Length: 272
Ligand SMILES: Nc1ncnc2c1ncn2[C@@H]1O[C@H](COP(=O)(O)OP(=O)(O)OP(=O)(O)O)[C@@H](O)[C@H]1O
Image 1 (cartoon, rainbow, N blue to C red):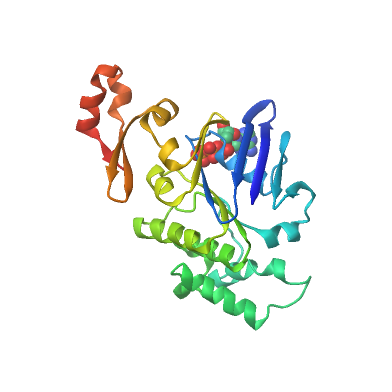
Image 2 (spheres, rainbow, N blue to C red):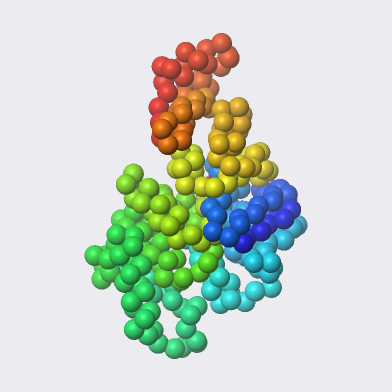
């Protein structure tokens, strides 16, 4: 279980996360959604103690992350953050093996089991063939899959993902999130694609300027009347056989008046 209570964070004097509460129960997937700059990454970083909240607490299985040693935290929690390119001369397999580091005592060598787990993790994300390639020369999507393999190799019971579908083609967007579902680990994931959030998350937290604008199951949060004021875009929800799809109407912003909404939506509606 991951639990954050009353978390606030400020860069300098500017509050970018304000009094946010979040609970991810064991095995559940909680999605953090919201417009650019609404505080999703900042909130996620407080969950793995990369940032210390100005107010509030974060706990993993009822223990405060603030008091955990890095190795202890890494044994419990795997993180796929938005990282810059590494210039280190590592292969993809080396990067995945980094996920085994918390399981080794200091300066110990990898065991045969570590290599087996790393290879299996690469296979699970469809990237086994990349094992010997230089990580720095992989495409954005290939890198993303390798980083997810590293998180899998860590074998933690909690997973934090910051836009894991960034750079992935449509097939891998679904495959990676389906894989996360099948892992049955407690997950908090930042997602921009609201249709992916609808399909793969159990609960959603919608941030708007650092505050929780709505929280609950996708069916409750992903409604036009909730999303339109936050994203400032027309939203139409279409029920489908296995759930619903959201359609977005950029022209709604330009069209302005409510009277034009329906017509504009029909004319410009498109899925993401
Ligand atoms: N290191 C920093 N110093 C100062 N301000 C920052 C820093 N990092 C982020 N911010 C600001 O904090 C706010 C929240 O940023 P954050 O990255 O958490 O938003 P986000 O919802 O993840 O955005 P996006 O969807 O664009 O990735 C933004 O206004 C951003 O400019």
